[in-house]
Image 1 (cartoon, rainbow, N blue to C red):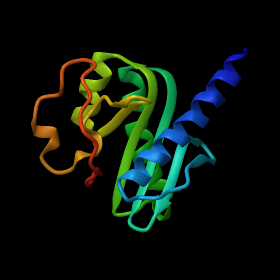
Image 2 (cartoon, helix red, strand yellow):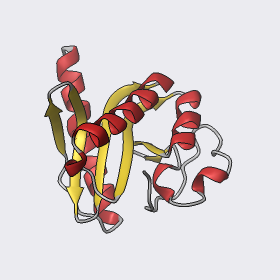
Image 3 (cartoon, rainbow, N blue to C red):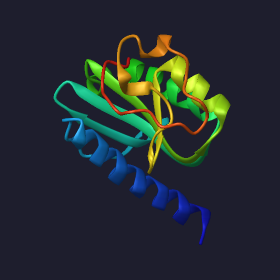
Image 4 (cartoon, rainbow, N blue to C red):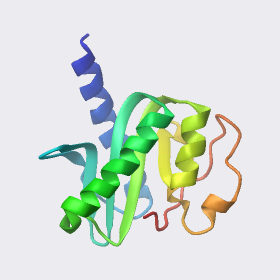
Length: 147
């Protein structure tokens, strides 16, 4: 299997899992790849007052967290019409480093795998003030403002 096939499989799985999780939270949203001049985002969708932008990867490190945050800023600057009042930044992965989860918690980025949440990204106001859960512990899903 080529790296491109693995990457595409991971993106397809991410769309399915995130779509299901969002629907369960009352936010039905179709996700797709967003390709704009100078900017590619693996996962993008918008519904009413909420949009999601994210990345799908086999291994999430701190660099990917920083990259997603930079892409969010770039999208806001170049294409603000694609954003909504509530923006959810997400990383879907098979493996996330503890440093990536810690940084994601600081930046309000939702990191998850097929089993559940690895960070507190979409929990809403005040979530970033509590300490991050021990490595590997799952936290209940909820949704709030993440900008």
